Length: 490
Image 1 (tube, rainbow, N blue to C red):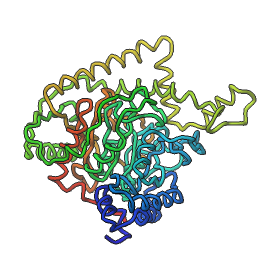
Image 2: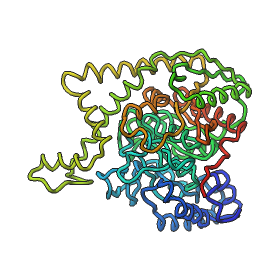
Image 3: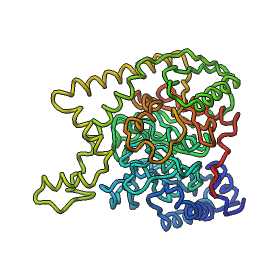
Image 4: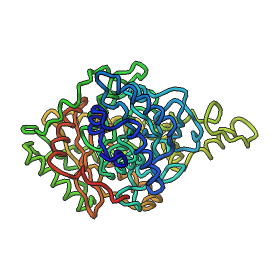
């Protein structure tokens, strides 16, 4: 393959070529860095590029590949990391003025795992500030553009990661998902995004937004790559009290194009009245394809408490954000407003000028929900709704191997279209956030286009059923060609 096209490779394709010594990690890394130089001005997916570090690590990876008896699947392969995950020696901003110059003194667990495989970290991706948003327009630095239409959003909050993968600015990326922040941008950019079971992947070193909802996961060009990254990052971590000591299977073992006999349910509550007709038609065609492949489809599934999920989420998540973001007071690290007469004023002004509008909105929502006199009426009630939503999912999975829904009710919308209407912005996650509330896994796979804009299908499973989700996603992917299409960029 020509060295100037290496950035187009998937993980498994690059691994095979590296293993056969037909390419080098250095050539692969240079190709990706060159691609970033060529199109980053248009896409604006990256906050930080660590070129010198990446090239040095690529040289080390080549030395390892030459001498190793068997090379690890991610060895020598470049990746971008969402800028909410701590990277030792590389700036981690959360796309916020508050952490604009913060360089972590340690790596997140997922970074240790990637480095153990000799992956090449080439930089950090743009995001909605502190992962609060659905469009990557809430970054303190700049909005990211969707490679399929540069006038439209890539989704959020992991929009930089999804856009970079779609535009071949990286071979794969990591994102984080609190209410759909991996799956919704994956759907908007026609790539694969997996939100693992809560506790499946360590959150140590993930800058917290809502601790009971956050989860790190892969964004990749195809389902095989998704399984390979999950093999690398999943597993118990004693430094994360929410990490579950559950055995990690080899996820690639379930990549078989056979779903005969699997029972798949379609919850009616996710087929919203105001869903775009093209999205609904593409989703129905995707479900029909699953039926052709041998799955038993039940269109009559009902999860009635789903309609309360959005309201419950926007009490629970802001409440946890209110507590988590209290640490940014301008005293120990991060931005500090020095033009103040006392400590209290310093804290107030630091938070006033260090946080963007959406972050401040959610802090205020959460603080109000947790305040005296309102805790029982809002936060406690939302927790009860959460229990009911999880109970409904548990009951559904007694009958079904998986559930399928659209990833988003719309195709990617135009930049600026919903910035002045927070409620319309929040509604973009209506199909994805119930999964986080229940703590269960879900994957988004490319499922079609409307006017050349991507549409995603979400596959939801019971806790620790990532193998089943990957199997269904792989079978669907192999029977379609959506994942092979590339955006019309140079």
